[in-house]
Every structure is written in C-alpha cells, then in structure tokens.
Image 1 (tube, helix red, strand yellow):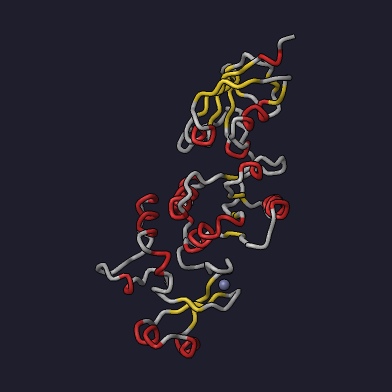
Image 2 (image 1 turned 90 degrees about the vertical axis):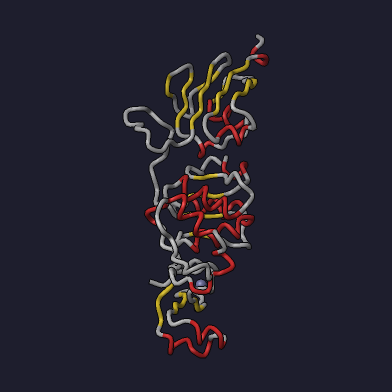
Length: 266
Ligand SMILES: [Zn+2]
C-alpha cells in the first residue's frame, strides 16, 4: 500500500505562510482526503483561503488529494482580477464582525473607526460561531480551531498580537478605508452615537470638559456621553496610522494638541 508515506507539497502564498510557519511545506496525506483538510493540517483555516491550485488547476475544498500533488494556496487578492477563475471564496458579506473574547481591545479600536463589532466577554466558541452564521458576521479570532469550524465561511486570524496593528490588518484585509466613520459608534457597547445639544449633557460633564468643548454625542445604547478628546486613550497615533494606510484623512488634530482634536463629531 504505502499510502501512509504519501506526501504532498504545499506552497502558501502571501501571509498564509505566517500561519503555516513557512511558505513551503511537505506534508503527509495518509488516506485520500479533501484538500481543505490538508491545508488546515498545516495551520491555515479554510476561511483564510481564496484560491487553491492542485498541479496548476483550480479546485474546490472537497477535491481529494492522494499524495504526490503540488498544492498552491492563495489568500484573497486585492487588485487582481479573478473573474473566470474558480475560487473557493464564499459570497461576500457586509463588513460586520464578531470578535472572540480575547480581542476586546481590537473591538474598541474598530468601533472607534465606526466598524460594527459584536463583542462580549461572557460568551463561548459555540455562541461566536452561531453569531457569525446567523448574523452574517465575519469572525475575528486568533483561535484557529474556531476558524476551522465547518460552519464558518468568513473569518480572519489577526497575525499581530498588538491591537492597533490588528485593527490595521482588518482595515486592509476588508478594504474598509472608504467605509470608516470614526467617532460614530460607542466603543463600549457598539451602538451608534447621536449628537446632543450641550445643554442636555451639561450636568454629566467634568468641569474642564464643560469649559473646553461644545460638540457632544450620546450613545443610543448605553447612554455614554462623548466629546472630542474623550477617545484620547485610543487616539495616540492610531488614527494617523489608519489615515496613512487608507490614504485619506481620518482625524484632524490641531498643532500637536490632542485635546484640540475635533475630528470626531461632525
Ligand atoms: Zn454605548
């Protein structure tokens, strides 16, 4: 028989190599099995994959490999026309996300940019997977076993452990540049913000804030009051990095004085 000795050559393109640890892997096939299983066996969850070529031919996830193949695995391309090539990409969904419990800071960063993020500390893998499917949300998690669940079609494993860099990864991966609406969503609860007259929130403000600001918004979910500068903990160079990535201004900060940042409440 000897099939247990059969191996296939996997070539991982782009940042899929980061997940596999290397760009070129020789891996045992064992019994004939779907190419999806082979790819996941080297650490690449199927939602990360856009195109699979086996010996130069595009195949689907169910294509059986028996050993001896050359398998090329590609992440989603940007700016490359894939029309006519049979990819394994699922139907696109709107850029709304569900984040696992370990990505709380990333959730706040993305919400700061106006991105819709379902996030809870009191949840589990089963609920995260269910929310992803039921609400057509893209699953963000560094738990690759969770991404490999059969029901998950849209998902991404942030490569960095730094929340700011993770947010930039998500912005780039999902081409969010034109959709960002900073300071329109509550970082705590994800609900949208609504502008409110200063008089309405006056009594809830610290004295210094009462003096310094005139533009205010209230979360339509939890009631939290926001003003330009109340996001300072999250601003600290982060919005500038986003602006550089997306090639458009995100926030206006006057002459190095972060307290004068009035970009949020338009
Ligand atoms: Zn809120």
